[in-house]
Length: 185
Image (cartoon, rainbow, N blue to C red):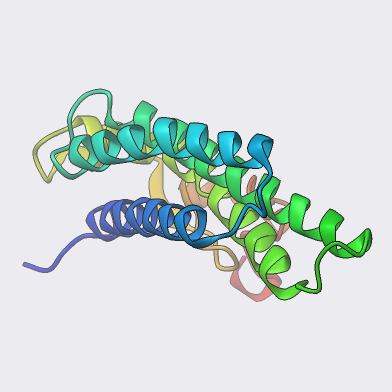
């Protein structure tokens, strides 16, 4: 039997968090602070807080421990905010003429946005239910009544929908695009 959609999503989130932590550590340990004590202190505090949370988060999420989702959301929020802040500082440095680099701050800003966009996925009731249920058949128990699990055709968010009640006016709560194309009604 193949790996289910929730298992793939879970593995993706675990890998994403691990890569984010590694990128942040690599960035903060190799970037020069140019003698600025304030910036060095900021880097040290970020590393001191995010690394332990990230390691614990990854361990909890891989083993699907009870507080793994909360730690994952915290870790994504902190790393995403750190990437946004570092990107913002880089853009300000570029605009004031203190730096010639614009590509790295832009990429860090985009990475921060991408990281923060994973938080609603982790808060999705279907994912939370799957995460909390240790057996593989638990996902169907989370769906109430005549609801079924479906994905948005645009952003692939996992949604619980009632197929008979869908119309072309129904929109995805994450991306705002139509869930049903007019030919499918």
